[in-house]
Figure 1 (cartoon, helix red, strand yellow):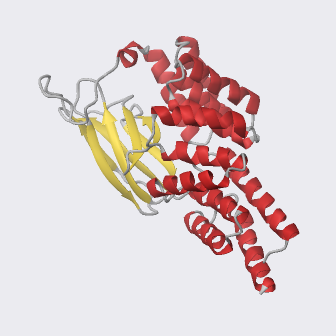
Figure 2 (cartoon, rainbow, N blue to C red):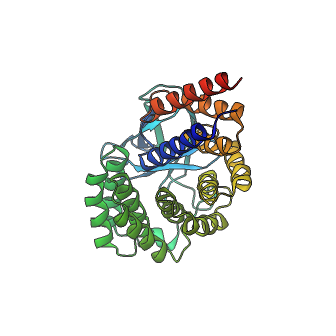
Length: 330
């Protein structure tokens, strides 16, 4: 058995690593990128300002980017996995492309927009909302530029564009959500909380990403009792979100409700086994339950997914200490 003092030290270290890692941009410590061009099929001219959604094969959203003036787009900092690209533009047929990313960069994809048949429904079932039609071009372009800066790991630079977007369209809750992420990555917790809350208020509590974002921030600061109801509200809106399940498990773990935290974390892992922080969360759960073989498995999986990440050395050292402690206890 690992002695009490060593157990407390290891548990504290793993909690610290999880908090630090959650505060960092999701683009840190991952492997590859997906890039390409969107062209109009009629004349091969580049399609500028077109929204490109990147999702996992389970349809869970990863990020959204917009094409540049030459029709190019790029999403960097991606783990090796199967992804789905969705390109939608009013008046054109939606484009759906599966991409297998295996530690390689610069996919060089070519995606073509074809004029939509007015009498034929969209194959993705997408309809343009009144809200989408009401977005001013200036606000939309500023938002697009902000997302691009955030993807390129420039949160400070992104804020300038998001602030322009909300100045142009004060009800732009998606921009406030992205501002919250940027402030969070800059370590400015008070500003992040204010931005997330603004997104929640403007969306009348119907934008799950903002609810999850604020819950993550609160959990980072051990405000678990405030985080839990926010995540649950988000999951009522999007019950299939593995990220929402992850944040709920985090909050429950912080409230010392270990059994439901484990159940929910394991459910999230089924939907996205390639998310490293899920395995760190499970490591925290297993060390609390003194399930050391499972703990070692969690740490091994994390290091396999993120061998050279910003907290990988600490996790590697923790794993070695657990192994030594187990050997000494025999």
